[in-house]
Every structure is written in structure tokens, then in C-alpha cells.
Image (tube, rainbow, N blue to C red; front, side):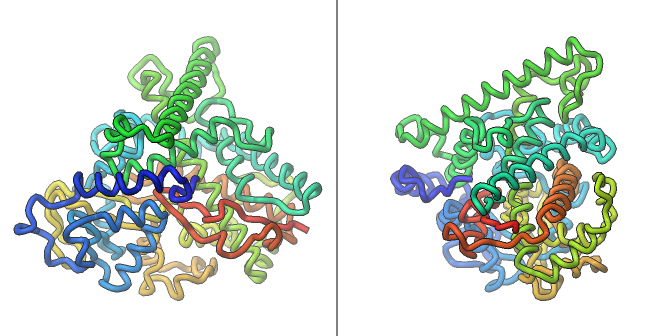
Length: 490
């Protein structure tokens, strides 16, 4: 993930974007004299402008900024003229429950380059239900079982490549290799062929384009008017992002065409997450819709898994007692263990859950809009007001999680109902991340194989590696600020 404000072109564009943000402030109420949420607590500026929120979005610390507002003002806080953030797990549960009157806001449409609905960005419950039914079976635990050998093969190759780098360089950047692994896994599961980043040991053009497009999506969200402005102000950063998006689309189109040819000639093609979408019947989709779904899956399925694995290794290596407990449990596995052997390991799964709590892949707000209005946290929120719930704050509620900033897997030995309700690393309700089971399978296999191979792994201080490198930075997806995590494995 690119650090947006480290790009000179973004700094050059920032004054123009800010001015555009003031002129086209979509969050502003139609009249300050008739402000339906004027009674809500929050900073004064939030009544008049969302520019401060946009600034923190572009600097990658929106989640921390909003969390600081909750610490000051309470569980319900106004964060912009037409946006409220809720940190109460009970209110969050009602917003995200199945059958809720809340739907996704237009925010999600700004995260994609094309005006095409997909499973992720749609705000239409009917479309979402139909599309989810098409994809759900391929993402179920039973279907993923057939894909586990492929997933495990990528995990094994990742560990092998880490070992090779350790032998030649003495250290290994685990963030880089987990990113390569997760991108290759989701590429193969979507298109039937990986991006071969693990084989090459370096970023491919597709992955570089993916970073560029992802970075620009953060700007698109903060400044929706930027899309129109880009056609008038020819800044290089906009042009390069557009070129990267075109190359991504072409690559995806070629991959879809190759797989469509396989499906046409082979009655039993290698299954992918989208195999059913290639049919000619009711479940079949045109290429451009398959491409749109695939790109959103790749973006969501690469950064999040890689980031979670990086922080998991970092925390385990920093806490000797946690590592000892994990190694003791993993030591009981047979040499030829498979994913099924890992599902029931209590401490392994507690470590994963605790990592997901503190280092959620999507820590910032998940915007929703009520079609009828709702009472939340003791306040009436009118229809049309955006309500966000951010996992960063829900997962740090001191009334739910004792000593919330401490990494403590044992807290999940006997979790309370409140802890389970407040945990939302994959969202909630009918819009829960469809890739949840895939993510947990990758995390289990990666954790087990890494610590079985490298039981003496420690965090290195070589190459200038510091704790600050691991500060969380998030636009929509989160990553370590330093974009690396240097480890010594013996």
C-alpha cells in the first residue's frame, strides 16, 4: 500500500483537492438552521465541514482520530456534518444485523473505478442477496476444502523462499513475503492461475498497478469530485493511476478469457471462486462483471491477509510466553498435518482471533445509511444520515476488553457474549466478508508452518527496523507504516 502523503504529486494536488472538498462537500446538511443532528456530541468543526476528517483519511490515521473523539465525547460522536460514528457494540450490532434497515452508503461506490455494482460495493439488498447466493457456495468451508492443497502449496513455497532469503541475507522481510503469498493465493483462486510473485520473488507489474489504483481509491473516497477534476487538471499521479487501472482491467480480461476457454473445452475444469459465474444459465455473468468482482476480491484478499500475518508474527515474537504456548501446541502436530488438524487447536485460534482484534484489516468506519431513521445509543439518527462503526474502536472498548491495548490471546479462552458481539474483523450481518473462511484457513496454515519451521524467530533491529515501522496506517485497508517487518529466524 502506498503512503499517499509521501507522494509529491499528492501534496501538489492537496490544496486544489481541499478547495474542491469545500466547494463540493457532499456531507453538508442542506441548511445549518435546520440541523437534525445538532444535539449530537462532537468537535465544533464537524457541524460545518468534513475537511478535517478528509485530512486524517489521507494521512492514514482516520481510525485513530475518530477513536480519540470517542474517548473525549463518548460512544456516539458526530464526525462530519452528516456523519455519525458509533462505538457501542449494542448499537453496532443493530446497524449490521441481518434484516437491518441500514444499507451501505455511496462511499463504497467511490472505492471502485467503474460504475458497476458488485458484491462489495452495492447498496441494493436485492442485488447483494442474489450475487452473494451465486458466490457463497464457492467460499464455504466445504468448497474451500478442495482448494486447500493449492493454498497450502503457496504457504509452503512462502516458507521456503523466506528460508532462502535468510540463508543469503541473514534477515527476512515477512511483510513482503506474506503479501506475495496472499496475492498469489487469491489470484489463483479467482483466475485459475497465480501472479507468480512467490516464484519471481519481487512485485510484478500487476501488483504495482494494484498498489497505484488502491492508493488513488483513497483519494477518490476523500474527494469524489476529484474524478471530474482529473480531466481538467492533468496531474501525472492521476494519469498514472488511470494507466495502471487500464492494465489491470486488460490482465483480468485476458485471465477471464483463458479460463472461459478452459470451461468450454473441459467438463471438469479446475475450480475457482468464480467457476459458477462462467455458466450459460441463470448463474452466468458477462466478462466485465466477473472482472469487476475479481478485482475487488484480489484487493480485499491480498492486503488484509498479509497484514494480519505480519502483525501476528510480530506480536508472537515480541511475547516469549505467547510463543512458548503456541510452539507447545504446534509441537503436537504430525509432520504431515493438514488444515483440518488446525481447526480445533485452541491456542492457535486464540492467537489469530486476538490478532484480528488489535490489527483488523479494515479498522476504519463501515458507512451505512438508514432508510427510515433509528435510535442508536440514546440518540435519534434521521434517515439519510451516514452512520459508521469502526472496528478499531469496538475492539478497544475497555468495558468489553480488559486492558484493550494488550495483546492477550488467553482472553479468548472463555469469551463473554459482549466480546463476541463487539468483535467485527470481517464486518457483520448479511454483509459479513464472504472471504472469512478463506482468510482463516490461510492464517492457520501460515502461522503453523512459519513457527514450526522457525521456532527461534525474533524481530530484528537490522536495516533500521524500529517499533515505529509497525504503527498502523489505514486508508480503507490497514498496513504497517514502514511497509516491512524484518525478522531473524535463527
